[in-house]
Image (cartoon, rainbow, N blue to C red; front, side, top):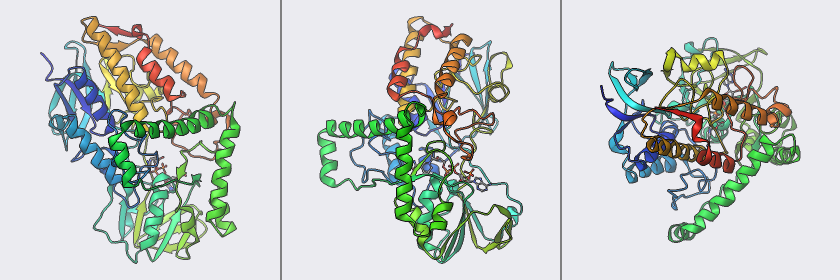
Length: 493
Ligand code: NAP
């Protein structure tokens, strides 16, 4: 039986849209994009909490082939990212391929028919020759397992499920978590709440954010002379590259760069927070880069306000009207905001059940062996699967550098498939093993293994203690490999 579609893409965020644009460029128009949400945009559709903004400069955090001269700020607010996603979907004619409110339960490779069977939770089965999973890295919200939380009588909101109708004015709020989301949310909630207690388990490094407005004449220049915006992109991407490659990945050779970033963050903390006790509590005890650093000009100084409290005693339990900490203290609250992040390693890799050839279950195989994916995109025994959000796939600090490298990989792979008149590809065990050896070898120089990450509780590390998320390459090297990998690293049929 011929498959219903040439390709199924799971996820209508920037990753899924990038894959769709690439497949369409290759002439594959018979594709469907499935998403469990009710609209496109992935992260930028789901997240709507106050303060949401990108923290990678927008000239870099966007497709290089679709520059947007209209960003209002160097770090655009979330709503502009959502609008940009809509613009891309329209311009590249992606909307007609999208189906929303479709929850994909799993996918199974049918070796006889040489196609994927994608199981949708309404009972439907969709068949396709190629399966692209673009389910994101941060798409499975983590709910804290705190005793009594279900008994809380007030309002509980996770940041991925923001309730705009809940007015925070005059409320007594608690925020649990101090990651990148909380760094954006805390100053906004503090402006409205009568009392705000922030529950911190692990402090985060916060660097200053050069959060400039882009004045209209500059935007007009970007629109009229696109080379000027390309130049701005090169400058911003190069700075990020330096931070990532030199400060994080080549820590052993260049720890002075990392130390420089840490000193900058320490100076920022000293400038922003008056009380030395609070300052000490806000100072991380792990090396800069073990955990994703954040950028903000307002988060730290918020703790100077008399109505904002930083609580570092562990939470013992939640009662209907309060949070009780293990030192016996408690804070009466009516609003509980969960900035507790996402689960990557238990539920997100992969986000759906995927069964390949010989009955190999991808999630089980990754957990029982090691997390691995050739070039961060292909896995042996999973023919015709492109798993965009895989171990060792994330390259550079902007997700778009990863997406565009993967688009190039798809281009090269499908070019070879066509040249051979084949329709099925599968990465070889040898190529996959060599890639895993190479990346884990190079990671030996990174801050993750040479620095002190013991107290970081960073989601860069999986349950086996391996830092298996980031690809230890410069983005230039990643892009070069995407266009030059040996085509013999795949079997074709
Ligand atoms: P996160 O970095 O994983 O932070 C979650 C926070 O919740 C941590 O402080 C964590 O403490 C705390 N937490 C979790 N469970 C807890 C519990 N049971 N009790 C107490 N504390 C608990 O998540 P996030 O802040 O949502 O950020 C995730 C990622 O999203 C970021 O790293 C970034 O990549 C991305 N992001 C980007 C932007 C942007 O501007 N582009 C904005 C927001 C987020 P521990 O550290 O102790 O575990």
